[in-house]
Image (cartoon, rainbow, N blue to C red; front, side, top):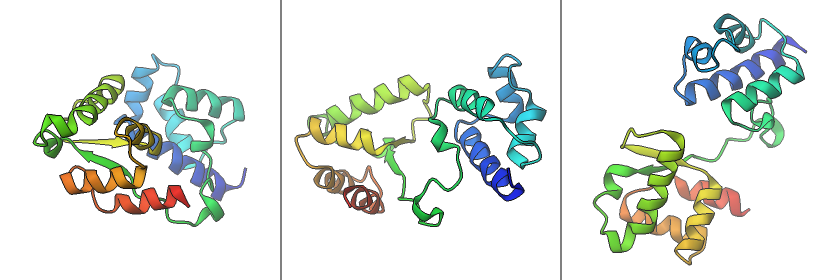
Length: 166
C-alpha cells in the first residue's frame, strides 16, 4: 500500500471515528479492547498497513460499509461531495404537528436507533429523504423545498438532491 493511499485511508478512518463522537480510547473501550487505541491511531496516521480482513472488521465495528472507508470513492476522487442533509430539530419542534408529525416521528426513530439525543440537529441520508418523500407522497425535490420553507433544512440541501437525481 502506497504511503499516500495509507494516509487517505487513515483520514477516512479518522473521519468515521470522529463522526461517531469516539476518541481513540473510546474505540478501545467500546470494543472492549478488541481495537487498541495505538493500533487504530497508527492506521489513521497511515503509519501501519491495515489488512483487508482488519479493514472489514473495523468497518463492521463502526457500522459502515467497507467502501465508505476506501479512498477515492467519489467519482474521479476529486468531485465535491454533495452537502449533507441536516435537519434542524429545534426549528422542527416549532412546525405544526399536522404538517411535521411524520417527519418528527421519523427523526425520533433515527435518534433512538443511533442513541443520538443532542436535540439540535440530525443528519439524514439520501435514502431517508426518499423514504420521507414516499410518506409525504411527494418527490424528494418537492419535499426538500417544503423542508427548506419550514426552516428545518438548509437551502444547500438542494444541491444534494439535484446531485442524487442526476
